Length: 331
Image (cartoon, one colour):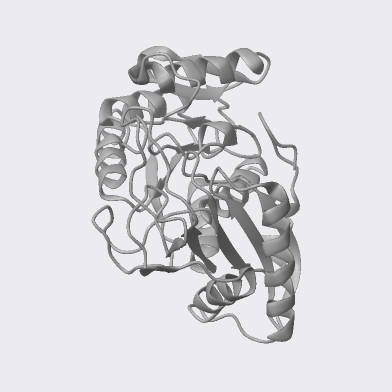
């Protein structure tokens, strides 16, 4: 393994410290609870948004903290859910009289941590709700989830909920918007290589030079199948079909299309995939209304990508167009 690592157990804390030091005017690092929060939080005039998951998926979620996005993110160790007490302390730090919405990718450990944190917060008189994100069409169930997994489509839920909260919407309305966006968002990913967690020091799974994993999870969970490497056209055709046929998206729909890199794929290849997907969707009569290409939810250094579609209407489009600013992106 060749990585910029000192002691693997310090990997997350050192990353978070660096993130805060690079953004002193907008972010605050609270090391005792392993969290990143907006430097202007709590804002008592808006619903607070909190998300967290295992680390290793950056820029999600700690790099999605900022105006128009999250108020705080509470990550666990690499590919591990955060402790309940850390989530609870995060909620207390950003709590607003308008309430707190917890956004949770649908993994068993994350669900447990955030549901328990919500109960503890409510016992303190904090109004909180939890919304589960489950956009992955790859598998119905896996070792890590109850139902479908939450993957790169979480970006659109964060963005829409963040915009609604900045507009002053109440907790029920922000929750409604998040639930609506999640309901029209679908994703599937594939891997060209495995990823290497710092604490493990070796690839999480093995793929031969001529093999790929279709439908892989963002923690390296097995996908639909392992098979021989195919052409980019063939791979994109399967991704488009799996995602577009699931909701389904049909001729006349207007969508947001995201091609998300998993951490080890050159951006040029991501744009190649985007072009192929754009043409295939156009052939189905599906209009691309908004485009996203880059790394939004990674799996450390895994080579591969995921494809996400969001069915747009005027409400969702307006929320996605609202301004937002995070450590690595201005929308």
